[in-house]
Image 1 (tube, rainbow, N blue to C red):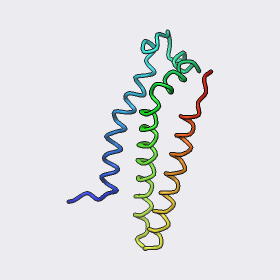
Image 2: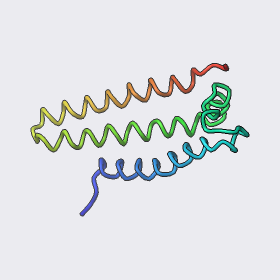
Image 3: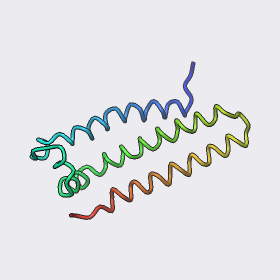
Image 4: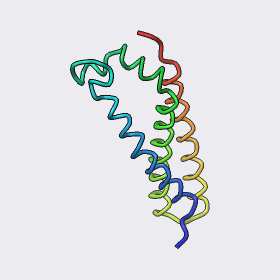
Length: 115
């Protein structure tokens, strides 16, 4: 069986998410930032340092998460109904949701100001 574009996107984003989420969670390990406890890794200074040095990986994590989630919901919605008008509506809404969520998330990452 040959995987379609939607399935390939789902597989690719799932693969990326395994590594990016692991990296993201490793950053909460206190010795990474020389602090004593997990709550200290969430201080404004530490988070600003993380965002300013890793903004590209955080943006990739955001985009992979949004695309994986939206594509999964899109697939479920398309299984409910097979009509062309429903497919057009679901695809359009999925694209719009992905663009809006990615834009909001990337703006949030880029617009972070020092504490």
